[in-house]
Length: 279
Image 1 (spheres, helix red, strand yellow):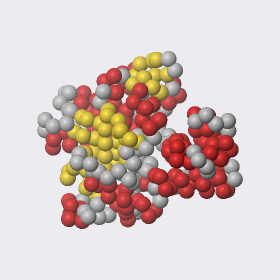
Image 2 (cartoon, helix red, strand yellow):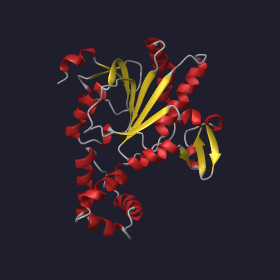
Image 3 (cartoon, helix red, strand yellow):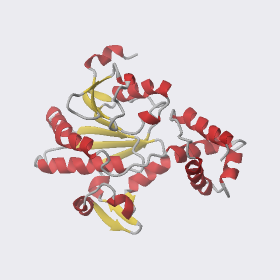
Image 4 (cartoon, helix red, strand yellow):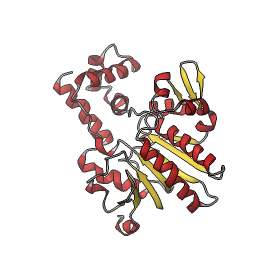
């Protein structure tokens, strides 16, 4: 790909999603565009880019953006952080909520590994607590294609082995044609929808736990405060935000909306004074 072509798609991603596209490896960008080109009925990337510059620009914009910004995550990434969530945060929230369900939002869900990992861990936490745990998981992403795939819960043998123990595979997945499918008990726990963290303002629902990993490092610097405020506003007053490890370290954009929790990695609480700072 030429520098001009890379600039075109990078600018498109920034305008539509607020994310900075990594163009340091043109071959990787071209490979992703090749998948989009075939799916949209074009012979090659050159034909796709030509159409993107002309009358097909509006129709192709989101398919191109989704294809270039899709998250690639594995199951149980940052296991230490997730174990903190399962063993300390979720039981604490269950005590606070009483008979009401703990509401979890997994933003930037990609192909579904993060929300399914959370579903597995909360089921395991429920078993450890004697089954007295009600959890609702909401998962979102920019990519319609990604959500469609994640909702089915089918993963390749390679994907399913990456991060999951043999016991978790047996207990929570079943073999199907083309790979392994999440058990219905997992799939029924998760509700899916498309959300743009930068243009979709938080609705009336508040979440006890929000997991948003991998977004801030890819976000343009001037848009990070918007993303942080939207995440903070989606938290219940006693809610928690989970970022990827190292994502919030020295991040001035997290203040004043969020407070780091001593002794916990990558987990933040909503600042009690934040209500007076909302505009």
